[in-house]
Image (cartoon, rainbow, N blue to C red; front, side, top):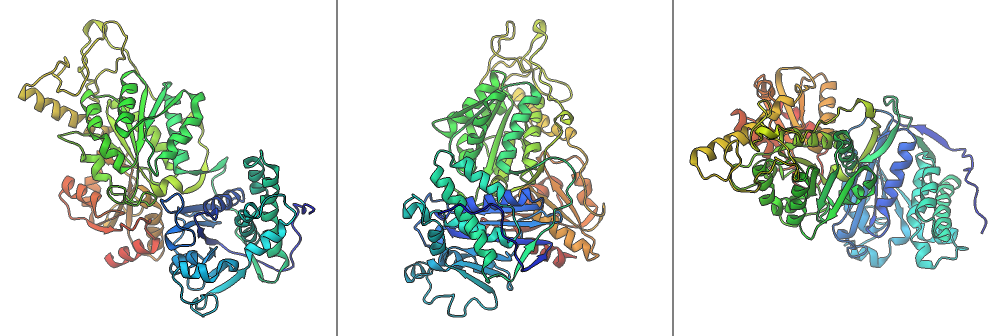
Length: 618
């Protein structure tokens, strides 16, 4: 079989310019849905659109094929304008089998388009999905436009000269479907063709088959009559500079590397595999050339203790996990609080207690981070707002940890970790250096003598003559660090540790308010709700309604001006993917009424959900 030209044929059909589109790819977890979504995202980023993504997949490595629990989704929204979310209702659903159609149909826009792999709508697959009749034939899809493409058959026909087995050729069908969507939305083929060449470089036959399938799907859409239109989304007017597409996990890793570089200190990362935090270890391990040491421990306790040991030895100690892992690390985090050593704990939150829903997002570990340990055990807590913001938050966490000699939590979540957006590469020269000093007056060294402004104790490392001192979890005597059971000393040290963390607020910049500085309604958000809240507030304000918005990065301690800001508004609304944890902290700290909007479905807020609540309150 001859290789088709990479130059696509010229179509005579109408090319329509649209502002924004949301597409959801859906299929069995073995259909390569996440790969297809990621490649479409890469091509979209190369096309210059602003974008947001939402990967959604089963926790099982291989759920039963063709069943509802085995459906894997990837949603992408892209626009010529700035956007903040992966979109509410998809305009287009690409369903590779009946189960994918059944799971996702309820979310599709009423006038949306369904593109199905009709070859997979067999009696067996329909039965697995719980259909008693074929939805492609019984009229149950309503007014939605349905495009049926026999992808299995067409893909195998395009690859009939390939030396690969039928099973191997059949695996290329996701690229065939991707080629169809590339033509429909005017995406460039080149980024994906190059990715295939790089990814499968050791197997030229696989490279050839996947590239051929991609082109064949593209040409099929271009040369048949199934589509009367194709669509173009113009480049977004983003600030000038060099961009890359980045996930929250990738940004977190680069932030840790940048933080260690700015501090001119080695970084040690200890962790134990757990979804969705494991990818931080995988990504960090690629950066050994920046002085990064990674360690996969035998369990969560060993991982955090190794990180504490690294901090004691003068390195930047970091550990990462998800909620159940934080529970296991609790006692060791208390040790870091008592020993007053810098430690960064990254919690990529997931839904539910115990093993819960490991691949679904939630924000239910806020209280666990703030108070989830025995005794009075204060730590700082930060949360990034977007995938790209994970970069800056990781740097700030390191800066606070070493300046105040305290553990710092970073609360990411499964949505932030796996979703992606365009990221303007920062000017490294503008990033503030992180100052670390292991020096102290050896003639008058006291291990718990504190900096008068930060209350941080000296960070001296083992092996420095004259700086020998005790370390451990027993209560310390003020200044000397000797073990002490004195009641008055214990109370003083407890208050001092709490005050030290509260003084972090002196480093928090003034809170930025979107909208009026006072008025009827203030919305307060944190973490990955940023995009949905921002869009909802923008929509309401565009209609002339006055609503203001504050997004918190610092969840403990709160910014110094937050209480005064809250008091200027009649009503405060806090949307959270939990049952009201920030609401509880705000009420406890400021004694003011706060209204909560809660969602614990393992999925992010939709813009419409928050917008409806705002409109109800004003």
